[in-house]
Length: 342
Image (cartoon, rainbow, N blue to C red; front, side):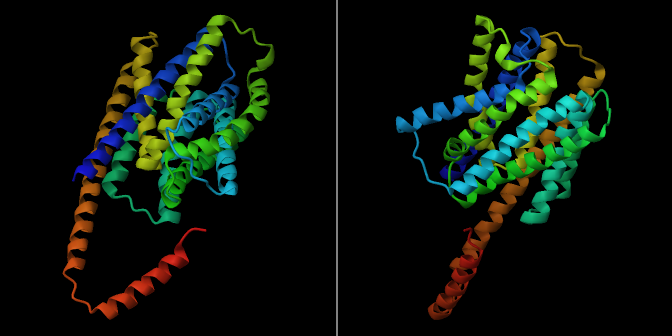
């Protein structure tokens, strides 16, 4: 029981850290890009990942965590995939209207549910699907203002959705199957994510903004906000891997839409962005969907726990002869060996 409470507190802490750091970095980046005129989002993301890696490397040298070797091919492909997904999301924003970009982000949840159902045999109850539907409708009402379609933008959006979903599913799968922590996975994959964005970022940003990141005038206040953004990003990247590892890719996306609602609210209260009854209605519907999702997941988790406990008690009462049990265990071991990851 104590271990279960400790696990729940760990999940709550990860969710809180993710929300707090993500909302903070959005406000910081909005000030940097809108007020100070620094539009180089992809290059900035590469700096975020480099600072994250350097911070984790210092933490590793100070023995804050142990490094666990992971197959290099897995790490490289995983890092490159995540880097590509970030670049594609930025390109999607550049080629599409804000409304269509928001639709792209909303589509990540149903696509993730579809992939996990098809390839991982994960079951989502009708109640959870309904709560996700409410959430998506609410965020759509609150954040989507226009929808303008074009062929290149649509293709980029589809690629961004696919790579983001696969990347987040792999973040969860690698941690669980290889028994590595979020810190260990982020420490080993961050250099590859940073590398692909560091190389491609200036080209992507120049194509989208018609400006050169290397010829930009870096005033002390711009440099200060970039430094602050990079420091907050350490917490954002760490909490992202932590949340996905402790919960699921779908839960992380739900959390992402909570951040969207909070950013809209903060934008209204702190930055005096325009706010309409439609925004308010959308946020309320989205929050209702999140609350229902949280409740239904909690009920499903408790039901699963009770079922596993009853199964365990049933096995304790089993009177199968020892020899027969050894054969069963030998058969199960063979099955596990066949299905174990390479």
